[in-house]
Every structure is written in structure tokens, then in C-alpha cells.
Image 1 (spheres, one colour):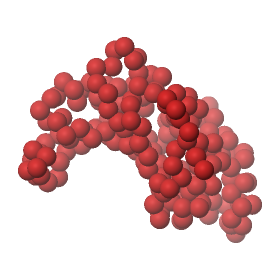
Image 2 (cartoon, helix red, strand yellow):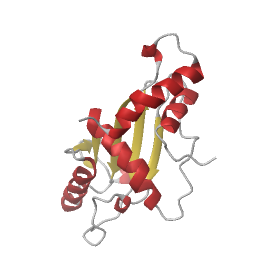
Image 3 (cartoon, helix red, strand yellow):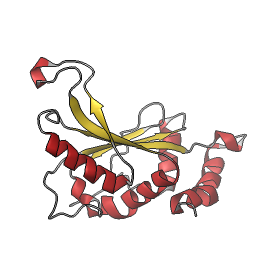
Length: 180
């Protein structure tokens, strides 16, 4: 059984993109390659309990085990040394990626207080989209009462689109709630 958003992509979004951008081959149609969730915590090396709690919650949100991110350089102003744990991340592909995006678009983002949409200006020139959520408690997998810490999550959607316009049209096809 495949994810609902992948079925939507195969059935509707591909045709819509083909008509809009007049591709010569169906292989040119942009698709989503991966979704990366990253949580940066500057004090993760000093507070291993908080990092473990954060990793457990990220695993609950994504259904996949996160990996620790490690500092590559020492930065004296931030009191970080080379090799310190500074956060965690998860890379989603395939059905788990589509299922996560489905939950994000249809359940989690609408739960944000005073939500008007996400910025359509956060595309890079290579067709990738970056945005952040300020609190992990917007995800239904996180029990609000049991959450010990509140932290933000940076979400990167990597597409095969060659431009901002192609990537935005792809995410619009999935129903990503951009504000205008």
C-alpha cells in the first residue's frame, strides 16, 4: 500500500506539472527526493538527557530513528568544541516521507496558532524548500503534557525541480499551505 500523497502525485500532480511547464519527457517532471528534519541544540553536549528526550520525540514524529549531529568546528563564542553533540536529524525517503508530508500539511501546520500559511519565499535556486516550526508540540504524536522541552524543527524538502517556480508548483500540487 503506497502513501496517499504519492498516489496524488502519480494521478494528478504529474499531469498538472506536465501541462504547466510543457516538458518533453515525463522524466523531467520534478518530484520530491527527500525531507530532512533537523533540530539544533547548542547545549546538547552538556545536557545528554535533553538530547535523548529530543531524539525520542523526533523518532515518534517521523517513525524513523534520528542520528546525532556533531560540531565540525570549535566556536568559542558558542562554547562549542569540535566533536560536541549539537543536535539531531532525520532524513526521510519513500513512503515514510510522503506519509510525514501528508500529516504535516493536513494535520500539523493547521494546528499552529494564528496560522496564515508558510512563506513562499523560502525556496533556493535549486528547487529546495526550507522552513521551520517553532514548537514540536504541533505534531499529533507528541503529548503536550509529557513534553519536557519546547524546541523548533527545521524542515527541508529536497526536490528535483530545476527552479523555484517548478518546486513551488510541485508543492502547491500537494496542497502545501503557502500564504500569498
